[in-house]
Length: 363
Image (cartoon, rainbow, N blue to C red; front, side):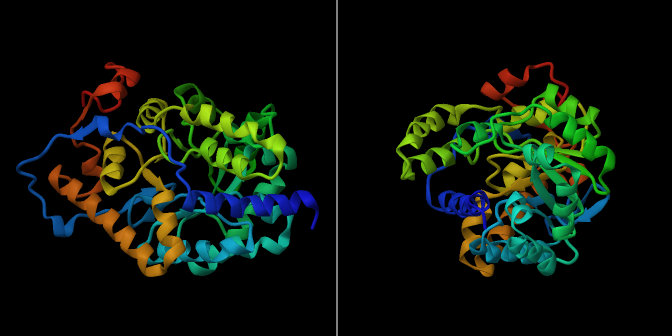
């Protein structure tokens, strides 16, 4: 295996370990500024609340989406297998981490293909970076879809992370055109996905304009890839990388908070996956009430996924229970009802959104 291919694979394991073991969350996603209006007479039965919904013409049993986390190193295969087993068991969607390593080295394909083996009926989303799409063309995207029998493909935007990585790709030119080409030719929907800095109204309009099937906002307030790369730089044996530690710390505050990004993107169209700092079923309920279609979680599921199937199942059950209680107390018997629930949006989040934003503030 070439040095570059070996490095891509080892970096995937570095990222998994750092996210599981280090403090890599940064910022405020804005959920503390969002409150439901309590329905004292909810007129629904909590025991029959229906969490199911549709996304890109697929029925899922719940709006919880397992965001792409890993793959691309032999040590990540069992984590992906465990996540996939839970996606199948609970009838929820799942994404995989960037498939670049397996596209560079076919010996690593099974660290991704295992998800379809374990989840034959789940809604699965492939994953490729915008830079890799630009550099290698639609063929790489097609291979990524084939590797896991994907129902959609996410093209991720991670330019903050790239700017801080010593080996990062610092040229973002041509990526919009590459995504447009893929949208025109792909046999499955293309999801444009941020990875922690959020998507603005302007960028969302660009994405819809080139034919995106959905947007995953990946807002600021959860796992910070600037923080992850700062930790990597601090642990590096290469003295030249040490200055990147402070660079990561400086830019850990960069991005659009999740709730603000969600509000901006929803003024432009849909469907939309809310992600970035979602840590509970209550957070999911708030995103759905604002207008999201699915809600992606990664870090809250990673640690139990490293432990056991039972631990991961318990975590998902807790999240679903929290979501069901929030629905019950807002008088929402099904997801469509939750989208009509009243919210108060206050504080800095309201200031950033603006009182005249049509998304849910004065519904």
